[in-house]
Image 1 (cartoon, rainbow, N blue to C red):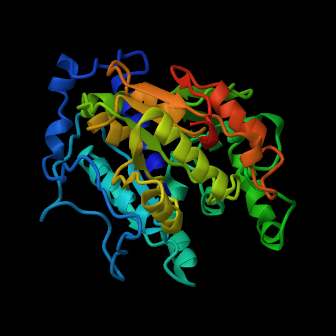
Image 2 (cartoon, one colour):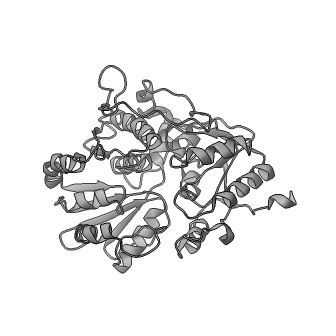
Image 3 (cartoon, helix red, strand yellow):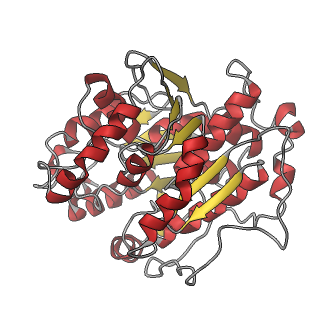
Length: 402
């Protein structure tokens, strides 16, 4: 796993397997949630509702050689009756916000009975070789491999080592939609926002990518499952298992609601899809139209952009310490959550089912796209919104008309 959302969805997948795919999800705050052993295991985890920081602050990175996530002075208690048997490998990224959320999610994974192995896979020139050598015996023995990002070169490289007959791909957000579409037509795996042809690094890595692509293709000796909350059509031979966030709903909430509206940020600017000035104008317009005062930052949003949103637009910047699905489920959270096209327009209605919270989305105007954006970007973002269930669509009101 390389992101907090991937690790969250591993917990969801494990919970679904242990409780049964046909088991009814507990009602928010209902008797099933009260009887769940999971909330009692979180007593050692700080329960602040979220972390609010000034937009010009950055998360302090861990000191060199920081250990894998732990909680308390001893190993946390494990709920072996609910979850058991997974070894979760975290390929730690450089980004401090992502690392922080991953550490918090790793604490929850350990309390759910899993073993977490924290790998500084990008810690220096020799780190990749050391990580691969250390994981190779484990991967060769595994009968099932669960991955979070099939587009990751690191994951693709590790897949070439694995000999597992069962391969599971858990949700990595909207990228899952693109992965399933590419798998269905047999094309090479390319992220939807990438533009241009193969670079020098792509050509060098091409043999490994092709081998990984074969391991992600079902056959007589290989079963492939996609565990997702996204609306996808199963390619031939692939099992698609719905993710309804039953673990999240059983372990968190129901949330305390505020009277206002919360805005959810995206990394569309950072990935080169949307122009910064257009994005800031849209955020300002939506905040004024819907009375939003808080902006929940995406973990990959730049400090400079957040500084402008906080300083120029007057929004309170919130940098969550967990994936937004858990933050919203835990609360306090607004009665309306407003987002641009992103993963949360699919996941939040599921995680917040029964709470009375409205999830709304504002489409990205084609005029906001950058000149370097992928030609597929506009259609892909429209598809993200158009296929979302249980959301409201709000129009973009230009600031000049307010």
